[in-house]
Image (cartoon, rainbow, N blue to C red; front, side, top):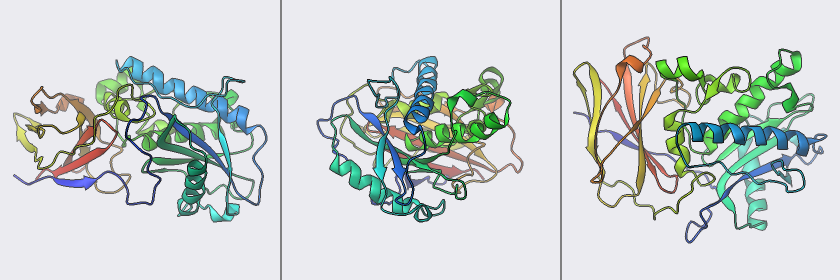
Length: 344
């Protein structure tokens, strides 16, 4: 029996840390429009993106409700329009200073300085940063990074093109679905694939290939996604307990009766709210190697004990026979502890 290795879920970045003590239950996502210092904002961005983000929020909340979760994603709303409100921040660099590769290193200090200078009681520690792109340079950051996620705006990026079989609709599709997907990472979601029955009933998982289907063909959040979102600060509806990690936790993974089982007991007093197990095939370890991993919420009893068998009929076959089991412990405050075990 090989021990699972604990991986830190958070990146070692100089990210803004917001106080977690005595916080109100309802916090909202920070939505930042970061404008390079050699350009202005794109025309109509508040109305265009305000509508896009409102639809995105409603998608998340419909899926949370469908999965029976009380959590709801909260975004700041402009009372004058009823749309999601964006905070415009003038960057300290020209557009060329925010490239796709490494541009986050310039963007994060700009955003952090703004948030620190503009405290608000409903701020969470989760931030969506949207950077406008212009005709000859679309290569801005577009990915999740710890508690931050990045997306782009382009002239004409408008929800009216959602679902349309037109050139404007085809252009809209990956940037809208991609923004929703990267937002998921910023909220704490890993990649995941639909199980066989989920694919038949609901379509494509957002945190799988849903970055190119949302708004055009059926797209959904998995129960595992919703388990993560319940503890994400802009979604949760309970007061979190003080963080206490699962010190000394060593689950068991074994093949048994034609399936794979994971079992163990959470340490007494730890602040774990949910356990999510993933069945990752073929390639693993890289940042994008888990698109094919089906995930399942693992129940545990009042003493913290669990014994879960993966439903193999729900899992798509891999190419190589290689399998890694990933176990994520989701704490009340959104902290995630990740354990991996590669099957022989």
